[in-house]
Length: 473
Image (tube, rainbow, N blue to C red; front, side, top):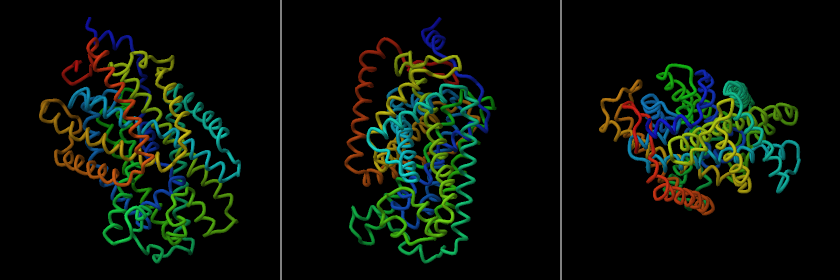
């Protein structure tokens, strides 16, 4: 019996219990971002034209979503970019693309907890700061960890409920803004205003650059469709249907983002709504109070639940699940010690859940929403660049492999160019503190990578399932 087969038999097994609607809900919930928490960042970065930024980013992300749709049906194995780029390029590309996307995924739970704590302080004046904030955040993270360690179906049902309740609340709020009597096209003056202009001066040319930089960061609310291939081994539906969850999640969220921020941008002047672009959260609630006064305080509370707590809950659960499965795959296929591939009686990975819990508790100490936001955007764009290159190389290396869903070469080239441009403009806008955090994260990855190169991989090879069977890399 080969070492590859033995390694797989020692590893845990994931349960095939996820219906297509649950996978769609996981992916859409992951993308369905912190709507009424990061609203201040969105509107500060891209001004009254935020709705246009979201519409453009929807179109920009779709080619990459098509790339993932093809790869996930051709290589249906948990690990998404880890698998795709190891098979398409090599194990080093697989490792670094996984490490980059994990940078974004692991940051989400901590950012989400920070959002919930900030909302509790905003809504109930609890003054949860410092040690108290860390304790409350740790308790919330523990609850997510317990849910992730339980049955897939339970997590899928919770995700679906929070997602659809959140979407309903956002759409109702959009209609209220549009019909408030405050909505006016005059509030779209200085259409391409951006808080990033403070970095580049105020000339016409620099205003355009500032807005494009802000628009590039809007990739952060879109990463998450890659959670679908992360759960591919647990789906109980035909493999070709994965594309419905991937593309459906992008289009669903893109439409909601565009509608909501078009409706909200028209009710107040940009400077008044965003405090001249200071990225403060909860501008949606302030806009509701301006339009309707204290008589809808109850609705502001409801919107806090469906516009902050539920979107954060769906996003965190989706990325937690995906991060766990990425670490599981890395353990199973010799990118990490095999103990990371062991599962409990519910077929849920054990050590990956504990690792993400511990890392997330540590991340709470950062307490900077813009640092999280910018870091996620840059890391995702780089990962998508590697995956786009890998898909083009795989076409040349293995044209004979069956592709239940075929992505056109033109879309793959478009994905590569678009993501490279987004990554470039992100580098212009990233602040010093974010660079420090990113460099530190890459440093840890480099140490792990070198350990694997010189100690682990000479003894045990990386392996992957391919259409030609199990292969070592």
